[in-house]
Length: 451
Ligand SMILES: Cc1ncc(COP(=O)(O)O)c(C=O)c1O
Image (cartoon, rainbow, N blue to C red; front, side, top):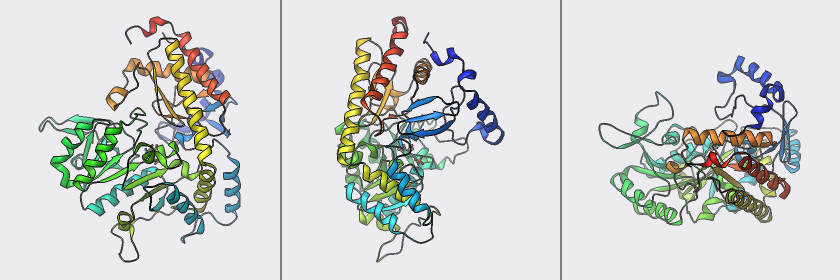
């Protein structure tokens, strides 16, 4: 069996305050928490504060944070330029029904960096950004359906969520239908969402051609995290673009998470040329944000000098001053050099983890790029959602791994991308590799048999 240092020490002893808070949370929140993405094993770890690369939990334990609020905090916690910018703007006013110079400044920064972003609109979350990008593609093409890839996470908008869990085969037609997000979701959603397999080059033309005239957009995360942090094959990216152009379909690159892959973003890195692009997370400096950008003629669905909008896009807190100044401070500090340094740290980490796997002949692999990584309980890094889907045994292995990391003072997200932040050092990377090596050492070779 896999060793489990944290369980061995006893949860109640090291997480007494978290256990107490969880009991209180259960009094007011369904399942005790306000987000279903909160990890609990067996209880959530309540955080009291964060500073730089670390968080301190409610019981005073210091943990290296590889989650960074689901990859949002590229500078870790309490980044001084963000705090200073926010302190200043708090005195000026946090939100207005009027536009401000702050939103223009962040908009200019994004447009100057992202080749696909000629114009931009701000919203409050990645979910909202994807929702408006889909609506914009529909309004522009006057078509309803979207294509997306199995397993990718694009937030909680119904059409973006369908297919996140993969597909089910319809008994009557024999067609693959997207798994819908929740019981009672309208079946009509399934009629308008085609779910394809990431990296399946042949499947794209073959599946889209019969419905091409209905399809408004191909929604693609260039390196889908929840689907397995899958590396995109170059011919796959090229085929997505070619098929989209052929049939007048727009490409929406969802870079809410993967913008952190480089100064010009992930699409530029992998040769994808989207018509629309959604971003979020790092562009808010730790405050709620999302943005939809893209080609000027497509963005004109939100209105232009000459035409009334085809699509209404409001949002009480959209472009609030706090998110705008925090995002600008965070993004300005992400210079080319800062991205390069994170990339080198990430390369070193992925190599360190892979070396340990080799040394111990363990059935694990590592995927990721730039500051992102994910450990898989398989010898070959997955290239599709199907390959990345874990058996219950593999789930247990990854649970044990997360617990082991926790006992070593490291927060490793479960079933999603882990990430580095700018305050992290080579010593932090070494501690991550050492924790993994320790885990593999403590688990006998017999555990690997048959895997
Ligand atoms: C690729 C992608 N799209 C959309 C979202 C939704 O963003 P938010 O949680 O800000 O609504 C996420 C969140 O993790 C994401 O990773």
